[in-house]
Image (tube, rainbow, N blue to C red; front, side, top):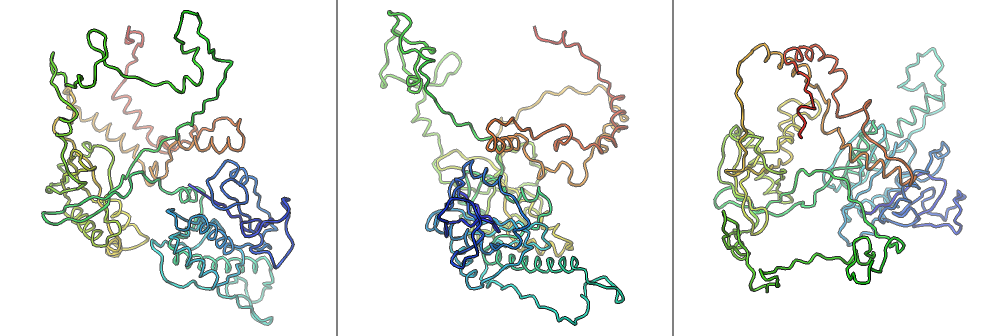
Length: 565
């Protein structure tokens, strides 16, 4: 990943269009010859350069930035910043395979000087680069999302009309006719609100041109969630021949839908330390070196040698070696060539065998992570996949299919399910009625989800001991406990709970970028734990918990008696 940072309304003007002769960070005078004044650009290394791979120095530079009230009167609005960022992206990534995007974080409360012709040319260049514009609006009142760029022209910012000196009071003022309304602060708030509204409309038209979104972020968590985005798997958009019925097939794409997030592995570095190792053997007669006496070079060059010896301790030639499977006390010969003959020769394909009711497939029998099947860029394939998904949802059935995930690999038995989350999202958009939500959901294609199913013998059968008695009162106690601990609303929602290990890792990395000797930063604590039962729920379930303890008393166990000897 490569990144560049553009700071707006900075006292210092320094970017790839203009570099001052001096290295002193001082504000420049108002000079017409300086392009894009009050714009400060940091490259990936934290210095004045264009897009590059980030380094810790870039984070240190950003951490030292401060916001001053004097910046309100400076130039360098978000239009200038977008132009500088777009040119930097063009020079670095033109005619190269990159996934490009510009993320703008702004409150849009300052006046913007719009050169419609220049801005339209820049936005057309972003469309050619397939670069989206993503706006994080601080306390915005409007938001929008566009999946694809449009051919609409950029709307110019309307000029504010000035009122005559003899005009009446503002229509939006709450003051009565008999009261004085010469409060400058109120006029300033109205003016700022008008400018903010116009800038929001301008940003929405720009994102409509390039594709992207304008998000009205009112919470810090919402900003972080949008900036981080969704983690993409390595196996994305792989081709598969999807056979819906005999003689009906199409090319689709499948990708890994879920994968566990892990902490990046540590980078190892070998530092030779001759004082800690001895190059000489301990004894003159000893020709081998122990591990403690090995030099760093010897440790790096160590290799594992696998040799085969016969009964007379002589190395066997490769032509005299064989492979076999153990069966009882004997061996059944089997070579790698024989194993290759057992493999099915087939291309990557997904063939539907038939359909069964959804109730016959237990969720406990899903094997491995799910895969997402879509029509990708083909509208016909998207229509076919979406039609199949809606049919499965209406009939409450599952498609059983034969799935060859990789070329010339053994097939897997899979179940194909509709992506239910997309249906739920369509039914909860704003305050739509059920018919309006259903109509809106048909505008976007629905994908399918692939789950592997087990073969005969793959499922373990647990051993169960039957209950000696049946007590309905104890069943009621259990039901009451479940009802008391039922979470409402978005409590403990997985969409809002971050992996504590990943959070601790990133917080520690950021802290040690600033201070290499900083202690570990733990994301979880007892007072504010996202993975704990809410206190209000625990207090409400106190009576049900006491009844559960009384119905199912747990005797103390002496660990000394149960400990293994």
